[in-house]
Amino acid sequence: VTDYGLFVEIKEGIEGFVHISNVSWERVENLKGLFKPEDEVMVKVLEIDPEKKRLQLSIKHLKPDPWEEISDKVKVGDVVEGVVKEVQDKGLQVEVFPGIRAFVPLREIDEERHKEKLLKKFKPGDKIEAKVILFEPENRRFVLSRVQYLKEVEEKINDYNSKLNKINEELSRISGITKEEAKQIIMKNMEEEAKYEVAKRLQEIEEEFRDN
Image (cartoon, rainbow, N blue to C red; front, side):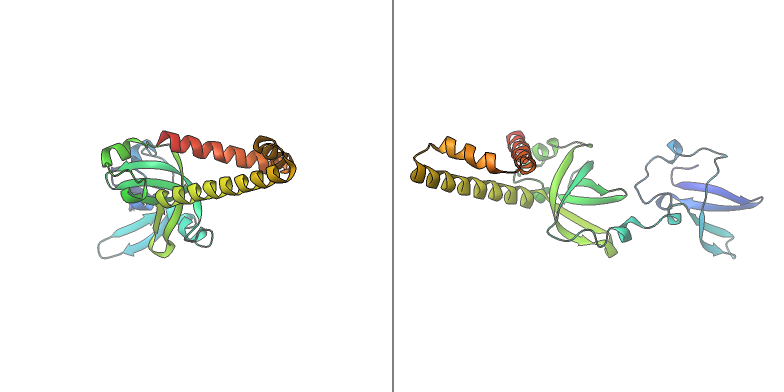
């Protein structure tokens, strides 16, 4: 077991090599924490070079490529949730699906332009929502924008409040009830599940804005 791969004995006297990039579809950083000498592993032969007496092996190719599996599940404009895996100088590495990471560039994280302050807002393990602005599974390119997502959320909140105010004003004008009473009438007529989801989402958004 080395820092850059695994030497695997296929048969007595026949040895092949699994490069660290071929161990898993997910990013692997510490092979010695995953494998030890004498471990038995299943491998796939990628290439045989008789002249150089080399065998290139792979563990990850025994499983489907996750990029191929999600190619029809994501499109530009979708909103996705992911977990921050790395905070880098140029942005955030976010795992959206198992083995699939997307990148959020600095300019797409927040309208805050001070890099140090911006990056301190996030740490590995944080969950974030963002809008897909580039998705090319064939090139393994996946880019997200939190800025665009937050703008759209804010627009929806403003639109919701505007419509609610207009309804309240109309009900108050027609029936003479107060705006608060009108609001209660509207909320009572909403389905319980829809009411819960709206209230929950609005609370989450308010907390997110307050943190920023």
